[in-house]
Image (cartoon, rainbow, N blue to C red):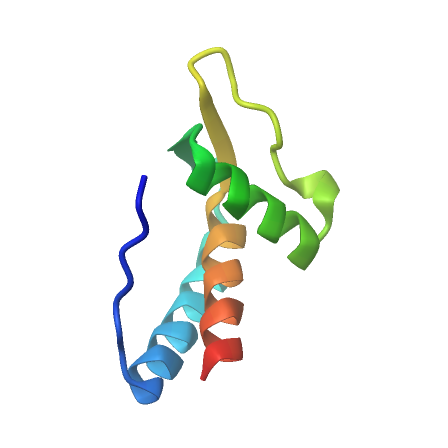
Length: 88
């Protein structure tokens, strides 16, 4: 899979980061809102980066029998919020 990059302004990135943080806080209070992603090189890289960013014990690092990873939706949102915040 080849990477495609999108350019957004720092102001947009900051706003998206705030929105993702807010959504992450809301979703963390819900039960079982897991997010599934296919096992591929991007997912492997994402899981590696998320484990370095937060508690590796909370990151699903093995695909299920269908070849998918189950990620905590709120954690994924918070990870991307921090990533955008870091880039601004």
